[in-house]
Length: 443
Ligand code: GLY
Ligand code: MN
Ligand code: MN
Image (cartoon, rainbow, N blue to C red; front, side, top):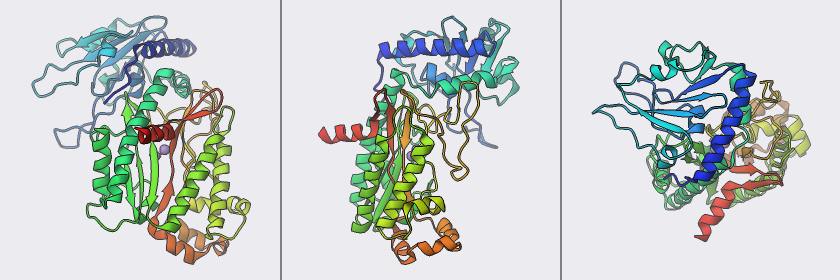
């Protein structure tokens, strides 16, 4: 289901893209750009292809998610042309082009096998760049300027500020994902195994596996300690806890939502405490906030919780200072979200491509920018019992500050992550995920 088709918002979005491309082309000394959708990668020694993942730069102009080989041409100051490739083929049939794209501000033209796309590129000015993946030399239509870094840096920097159309897509991607999360929770409560729970999520969202914006993480019990756990158990066991990280995409814009559930009263109260500290962190995700500082604030909150539940006996300051808290929270607090789940531009200090460095102690932090209105970010603190990291900590002097009996009690639950998607506004933020949960409960 693709609910957002607001033609006014879409038209305003295209106008904003024209402004952004005009500036980026000017600064990169270019006259025009040809953006290729790309092709699905072939499977080695086979006549099949891997699922098609279109070039996000093309999807930003036109959400054509299943039209390989299509292109978009844009001349500085001109109107964008979308050339939709429609194979004349009795083996394949493309999905229809949505009406709001056909009737929208782009010049849309269908191009079949008989009409070479090359002909449409030949008319372009000399200083035309190609933006897209190049697998074969001819993929760039003979254009010499391929993915110029200067152009990409400005475009990627700009993608951090979502247009109102993009925010609506992300809002609906949350509504859709929350239907799946509620169904997944019911399935877990009814004793479903990981495979059943993933299927319950997809069925409620009405999406195929390939339409998921990222492979869902459905991890029961100790499996939640593997951060990107992918194996789906197909047998029902007595699951005591569940971590589910799953999203949907609307017109290519992804939601990225995690919830954790448990029947165990002690672990259940830790989940509640994580919700509370996550909500508290969300209140600080406002314009002007430095995401690196928010990440450190998350470590302090998690270190406080670890001491409160008796896992450690040192002060939160010491736990953060000595990096003990990194054993339990080894990933970043969040990232930009958009056409890519870990969206581009999150480490850029300016449109010129200079980077804001990732702190030495936090190599997995994916967002170092100062927050601005129009950003969409995830806020996803976690607390895990990861054997590999625990063993390392145990072998150091800091290992003495850990109550290992308590850790052994909690290992069976794997871990907790609570992840919401926030739209940073002029006055603070909108929590798209919690709003979607609240709306679903009212219906
Ligand atoms: N689902 C991947 C992440 O949370 O970043
Ligand atoms: Mn995430
Ligand atoms: Mn996630």
